[in-house]
Amino acid sequence: MPVGRLPLALATAAFCLSFLVLCFANPWTYDGYNWLRDDIPDASSLRSEAPQNALNKDDFSWDSISPSKDLIWHSCYLNKHCAKLKVPLDYKNSDASLASASIAMVRIHSNVSHESPSYRGPILFNPGGPGGSGVDSMLQRGALLSTIVGPEFDLIGFDPRGVGRSVPRVSIYKSRAERALRMAVDSRFISLNHSADSLARGWARGILDGQLAGERDDGNLRFINTDHTARDMLRIVEAHGLEKLQYWGFSYGTVLGATFAAMFPDKVGRLVIDGVVDSENYYTTDWSDGLIDTENAWMSFVNGCVAAGRQGCPFFAPTAAEILAKVDDLYASLRARPIPVNTELSSGLVDFSTLRSKIFLALYSPYATFPTLAQALADLSNGNGTALFTMRAEPAFECACDSSEYQFEEIIDAGGAIMCNDGKKISSKYEDLLAHYEEMSGDFKWADMWEQIRFTCLAWPDFPKDHFQGPFVANTSFPLLMVGNTADPVTPLWAAKKMSRGFAGSVVLTQDSPGHCSLAAPSICTQKHIRRYFLDGILPEPGTVCDVDGSIFPDPGTNNLEQQAQAILSVSAEDRNLMGTVWELAKSFDIRFPGYL
Ligand SMILES: *[C@@H]1O[C@H](CO)[C@@H](O)[C@H](O)[C@H]1NC(C)=O
Ligand SMILES: *[C@@H]1O[C@H](CO)[C@@H](O)[C@H](O)[C@H]1NC(C)=O
Ligand SMILES: *[C@@H]1O[C@H](CO)[C@@H](O)[C@H](O)[C@H]1NC(C)=O
Ligand SMILES: *[C@@H]1O[C@H](CO)[C@@H](O)[C@H](O)[C@H]1NC(C)=O
Image (tube, rainbow, N blue to C red):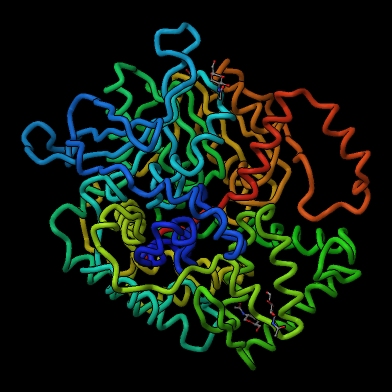
């Protein structure tokens, strides 16, 4: 969930224009529950991709569109469409109030005409976070997602209220520089096992976040929550002249999807939630059951490296126990002597926390990052920290940037606002936080990388909690499809099964893979089930388990070219196309940490 959010990196100036992806990969900001992000396995490879990604920046001016009550699409980003829909700021006082919010969205048009009988309407997406920008993720991943769901659908990515180009936009810092400096001085994404005072410092920082949020609230902060975003989604559906929602949400997007389904059960057309969060737990601000499978995800790296052999995995050792011992040696050695690293992009230290955080984040997207991680660990054993440092590295912050270029950037502040407004108020006492952390670290080995998410909520402004917070029980007008991986580091399969019990007729599709959300691993089987659900309304049989197509590390048994060629020829052209798509997504998939200031 919520670790580092990317925004800080965004702070990076003109550089960001061409390195948007890079910018997005801010390590401070891992986002617990977000995953449609560009992954940054290796900064050098980004350089060649940069010009393409530059298209994603706002070469189109969002200022040129005014929000309207009716849905008016404008051409943007080559062949896409953009709109801003005017919605009530406060749904509790929607008639009386003059104040409105505006929701920014981008659409990839279906490849059939809207008059064609095969046209199937829009699917809305949410990329997680909370606080992730659906517009950005659609610009980056829309073409690939369209290949999966098929040409009959429009795809719509929207920035939830509080985020990016939507208004009001949450911003707790006065400037990009202030945000960047605060993050640099007090990094959010360090291990709570970093030093003796890490937890106490994290607590104090969290209190400060809450104080700043209260002090700098322009009066709109209280209207940023998932209940209102669910209502906004219904408005988007109605503005299309439709009655029912079609939706695919990932990670935090599953909280949004489940909230919508529980609030408006008769408005569900098709609803896929993928990388399922236990929404009940989310609304308690406890964040206590995300890590059930984290160790399994980590062991999939360890065991995968053993199985790949010396040729396939640079960090190879003959047994899992030996690999784990080598990692423990690295932890101890970095505690004793952090390694200074200086690259073209930026410079800094590789220390205990760096190693913990890079490993933890790698678990989100094993197909994109495990091979790189194995090389980085091997280099680290030889005293070279460059490769590890470079994983998800972002350029150093430059103050001399034109702030108008960043007026729409997705920033971490929104994630904190959404989750703290959504969830139950928590105690701000250090002793209570300590007790919570001790319990979490007793249960989970990766609690040192997760507990931080809640800190922003410690002293969050005390708004009335009169929004929807459950129960997640409903007979929906169409059954939900839930997707869970067997070793998802932050949204365990257990949570998908738990949530499924509340929604009559819903089915859990299991993908037998590590990684956060289905797209983190290439599975034709999973994505065909998702397409069939959207297109034909067919749910998989309960208990269906999908395998993954291909392995993370080179498989010593099948590296013979003839075998590979035969495997490729044995599938249909359609499957080959889908195979390319799922691999491309898995290789570039990234999810953010949940929203933390
Ligand atoms: C869209 O339609 C055109 C023309 O029919 C076709 O050439 C193209 O391959 C289609 N694209 C997709 C993604 O289906
Ligand atoms: C902290 O890190 C050390 C290794 O340096 C490890 O032995 C210990 O179990 C960790 N403690 C927690 C609470 O994670
Ligand atoms: C460390 O590794 C990097 C590649 O990640 C390499 O370019 C560099 O030369 C290595 N440094 C030393 C001192 O070997
Ligand atoms: C769903 O439908 C069943 C059978 O009609 C009914 O017993 C149950 O109370 C309904 N649940 C909800 C939440 O409406």
